[in-house]
Amino acid sequence: MSKLSWFEGWLERKEKYARAQDKFLSEEKFSAIGVGTGLPAISQKSTFSFRNVKDGADRFLGISQSGEKPYARIYTRLGNPTTEYLEKALFQLDCQHLIDAALAADEKRPTIASLVCSSGMSAIACTTLAMVKSGDEILCGCVYGCTDSFFRGLEKFGIKTHFIDTSDLETVKKTIENNPKIVMFFMETPDNPTLKVSDIEAISKITQPKGIALVVDNTFATPYLQQPFRLGADIVVQSLTKYVNGHSTSVAGVILGPYEFMSNFVFPVYKDFGPTPSPFDSWLNAQGLQTLHLRMKRACDTAFELSKRLENHPKVERVYYPGMPSHPQYELAKKQMRLGGGMISLELKDGFEPARKLMDYFASHTTPAELAVSLGSVITYFQHPASMTHAGVPEAARIERGITNGLVRISVGMEGVETLWDAIEEGLKLAY
Ligand SMILES: Cc1ncc(COP(=O)(O)O)c(C=O)c1O
Image (tube, rainbow, N blue to C red; front, side, top):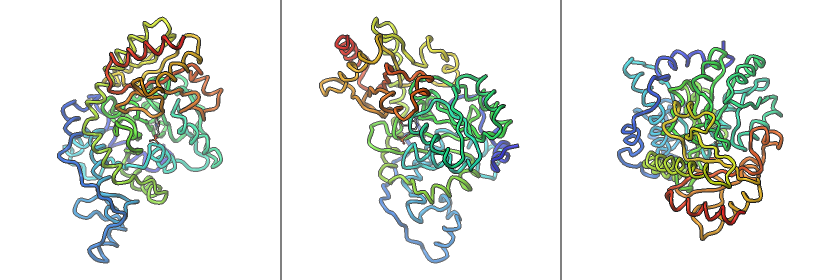
């Protein structure tokens, strides 16, 4: 029995429509949805005029007008037509199988909803604040530094977070058994920045009977590489800032979740906190979706080739890449992901000093790639998690997770294998 009022009602539909034998939407359908049939106009407006007083009052009651989203066309903090286009496309990319199954079964109730937010962090914050109350507990894996500090910050509201290695199923089981107040399980897979892979399907079978909602941050994989609802996730969040935008030109995020949870719990938080995206950013992200499948494929192919070469380089101590047989969860990654992803982490021999020199080499404007945080762009980024993206994680937790001082994270872009490899070899020569 769940402490979450919406959970039981969702389970029946989850088992009927969301879990699926096929792990992925076909390439063909994925690209067709992403490309769409014409980008929306940029509805650069904060407010929308009503037809009459009744129309305005109805909209405030959430009554949908001729198929529009509830609360649409009132005020952009509550929703915007350009953003709605993006919400629908993202919803279809993750949930087309669910929509098809629900339609075939003549399901009358809405199943899943999506909300685009002003950042990945606001998507995570809205989801969490909509779910937990004082006294509840959260179970969380190795996550992005701001997600980690957000959960730690909830302690002052009486919400405790247990941080564990979610790739270890025994630890997952034990922590859940020993902590009955946990209501939410939050994880990234592959995680940032150690690229450990966690078994969504196996974890969902542990969380579900306990009434715990499983939230997957799918930022690294995107729906192209991994479709968490098919594997048993209850809620999916994603930073669109990364692969969906693809060009580092905007910041945004998305929440996809059971309709009842979204409309009764998430939307009120969203409406009152105001993490609305700008219509222009939504348009940029809709444009990014059109090429997501192409960019992801190229990033994965390049990352795989670079990982192989890095693994054989005499100055490289260790490479973390889920698509390599040397990765501890290689078999799981093969089962759960379409390809190994566009992210590589590595440690060099002799630790931080050569790593610093390599990253400084990429900071130069004469080299391809940049020294920058973020990821998923056409440009390759090198960064140092211990002092940058994960600087806020307490040192002991960082070390326990393998975020050593020598760890370098690479987000592989579109420059091409040989260009990047030539530069990496040159950078490594200069680093020693
Ligand atoms: C895995 C992951 N989730 C969430 C976020 C937060 O996204 P945003 O920067 O769009 O708020 C990031 C940012 O790097 C991330 O790497």
